[in-house]
Image 1 (cartoon, rainbow, N blue to C red):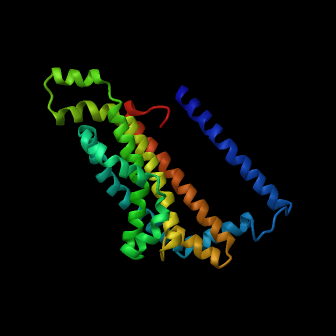
Image 2 (image 1 turned 90 degrees about the horizontal axis):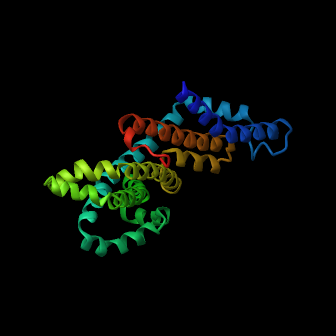
Length: 258
C-alpha cells in the first residue's frame, strides 16, 4: 500500500504541470485567443490523428523512425561500452584519444548532416551516423566515469582473491558501475531520438521528422501538432518502459538520479 501511495503521489506531481498547460490550451481555444492556423483546435488535431492512423500513414512514419533509432542505438552500445572498458584499463590510449573524442562531443551532430550526406548520401547510413554521434558520448563517458568511481578497496579485494581481469570486470566493475552506465544509456536514447528527428527533417523521405517538415510546407499546422505530440508521447513511453525494466532486472542499480 505504501508503494502505491508513493507511486500515485509521484504521478500526481508529474501530471500537474502538463494538466495546467492543457487547461490553458483549452481556454485559448475556447475563447478564440489565438489564430486557429497557429494553434489548431483539439477537434482538428483529433480528426487529423484519426485520419493518419486510418490510412496507416502515421504508423509507417513511426516504424521508420523507431527502426532507425534502435539500430543506431544498439550499434552505439556495441562500440561505446567496450571502448570505455578499454580506455579504463589503458591510460595511455585514453590520453591519446580523449582530446579528439571531446572535440567530437562538443560538435553538434546535426551540424555534420551536410557532410554526412556528401559522404553517405541521403540513405539510411547518414541518419544512422547522426544517431551514433548523438548517443555515443552519453554511453561512453558515463560508463568510463562509472568504472573510474569504483571503490579501490573492492579492486584490492579482487586482487586478494586472485581474480583475473575478466572476472574483475564481471563481478566487480560492471555491478558497481551499472547505475552510471544505465543513466548514460537512458540519456543516450533520448539524445538519439531527438537527433534522428532533426536528421529526418533535413534528408529523409519517411519518418516523423519528415512528416512534420512536409506538413509545415503544406501549411498543415494540425499535422505538425500530431507529429510533435507523437514524438513526445513515444519518448515518454520508452523512458517509462526503460525505467520499469531497470527496476525489475537491476533493482540494486536504481538510484534517485535515474
